Image (cartoon, rainbow, N blue to C red; front, side):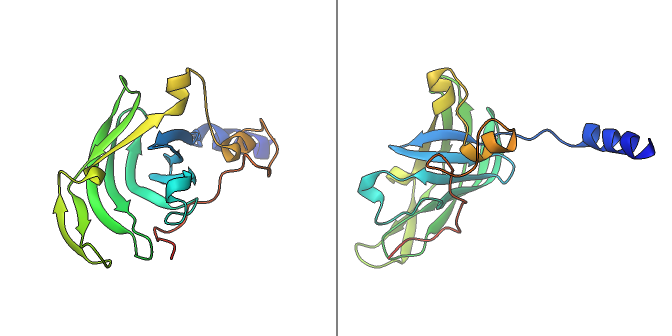
Amino acid sequence: MKRIACLSLFLLAAPAAVANDLFDHNGSVMVVDYASGTIAYRVVKPSIAKTIAPGAIVFAGTIEKGKFAQGTAYTFRRGCPAAPYAVSGRYDASLPGFVLAGPAPHRGKTGCEVIGYEIDNPNARLVFIDMAARKGEAVTTAEDQTANGTTKTGGANTAPKPLVPTATP
């Protein structure tokens, strides 16, 4: 009986899990993991698939669902390491989605070296459209559905694990 009471208290004290949401970013499907504070590529659009792999992290920091995000974003160039830069922003319900901004790395015409940071760089403003809010329904990853018992593991709907930010050669 004591074990049942202790287990009940433990379960009541455990924090509720926050689902990972899917967002559109320039035609790629992104996974926002609120617990780890990351945004990663789930499905990379074909035009950048030789540069960015599924699971690549584009943002790491603090993300509060439906409110704000602050941390480090990454830009990618084929054959180069990801270039980090500070961003912050908020959830804009009129989109609906997150808009993050910060001076983005500028690389030379060739090579990987970051030669400066610019606010007029296309990567200085990142927009992530909330796919669930846009459709008016809950959209979560297969891993989240598995965690709450609503689907089986494996298959084409399983989201890849996020990777350390790197570019593919």
